[in-house]
Amino acid sequence: MTEARILIVDDDVALLDALPRALRLRLDGVEIDTVDNAGDALKQIILTDYDAIVSDIKMPGMDGLGVLSEIRKLRPKTPTLLITGHGEHDLAVQALRGGAYDFVQKPIDRDYFVASLERAIEMRKLERQVEDQRHALERHARVLAHVDNGVVLVDDGSVVRYWNPAAEAITGLPAHEVIDKAVGAILSGWNTVTELVPVSEVPGPEGAAAKTLPLELDGKELWLSISGVRFGDGVVYAFRDVTEERALDELKGEFVATISHELRTPLAAIYGSAQTLQRRDLKLDEGTRERLLEVIAAESERLTRIAGDILLANSLDSGRLRLESGHVELAALAKDVVDEMREAFAEREDIMITLEPVNGGGTEVSADPDKLRQVLINLIDNAVKYSPEGGRVQVEVEPRDSGIRVVVRDEGIGIPGSEQQRIFGKFYRIDPQLSRGVGGTGLGLYICRELVRRMQGRISVESREGTGSTFCIDLPVAPVSASQRQTAVSEPA
Image 1 (cartoon, helix red, strand yellow):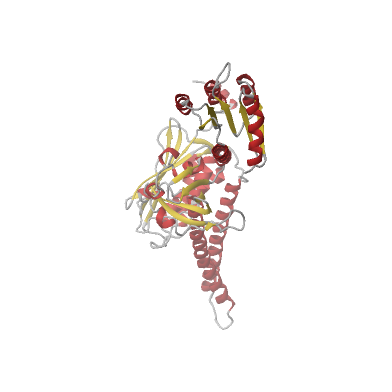
Image 2 (cartoon, one colour; image 1 turned 45 degrees about the vertical axis):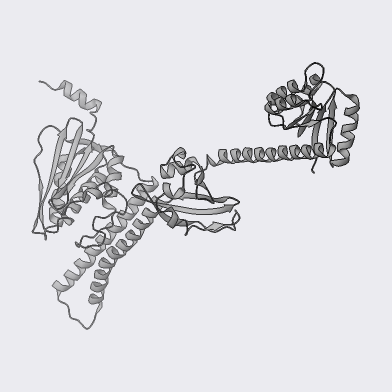
């Protein structure tokens, strides 16, 4: 037996001398304290957490039952053996009802006494181990409550035993709805997914790398990077939500494919035109040479726009872009852009770009004129591109109580309702497979949104699939300067 500490309480001095000597002969490494009265015993019990206590029932002053009652208050987990006289069965019953671990009758059967004491000491040590493990788990739980990764403990019966706050945040399932429930009943598809989760026998860097797997939750697909570590009674799983990362990776993949296509077309046209111009075996008239040079110029300009969009999107993401602030007459700017876009799409005879007359007051806003021009160009360009069957693209400038609104309305293919929250995202395109022949980098509307936001404005869309789309930009009215107020006051009525 490992080291143990025992307290013996008895007013019989001879017994206090003989009993410890007998126990030391039978129990290796045992440490024994002795006292001859209840008062001193309680002082010792307050100071020392004994592995077991042995007390005589009949003592002057406070008797053994009184000592037992106080022990239950001071050290409720310490096993207590009471020594009773021969035939004192009623006292023995009272002792057991009062919480005594065992009772030993006089004359003491030393074999029985030692065996009972050994069991009591072993029980107390096991209780201490359990208590230490519980405290360790509580400490670990406090630590795990503050980690970003979800941590779940699933026992060998597939029942959830621990569910940290991060697991709650990622899944939306509170701990009280999950703990002590079968994990398969809580997480649909878990039984299939868990077969694919890498589980290590020991924690640490040598363990299996996490695997990214889908899990359905409330009808939504959640992608988790998850791994597990086996322990004695189950598996601890750690996971993090990579749904957004995966979506971004997919968008990046689509973006690379789109950019490859967008670059390949102008590069092929430039290369083909340049190769034709270089051929010495062909005699080209001046008109043909001029058209080939125009192709090179136009496609080079297209490449410049693509590179410009990519660089601008990167500047917006990094926060490096600085906008100029000035007063912009929005009606005049809209007229210039509409005239420019009419010329740009002159070959599209099936498209009509119109500017509605302004009704109401002034249309001056506080904005960056170049960036606002770019936003209008992007929206009109999109309206034309997504009107493959032709139609009307209508631009309106509307003074409103809260600011100035610009509307770009088309009669094109429209946007499905399920996609309207996504169209302003980076790399997003309504027609990613180019099934309608509509190209683009997927950055135009993202750039529009970010530029308008930086001009303290808001961009929104209303659309029905097959009937066209309406994009609205709301911008604040330019503040009136002190000189303008003074001029207004001084002008005669």
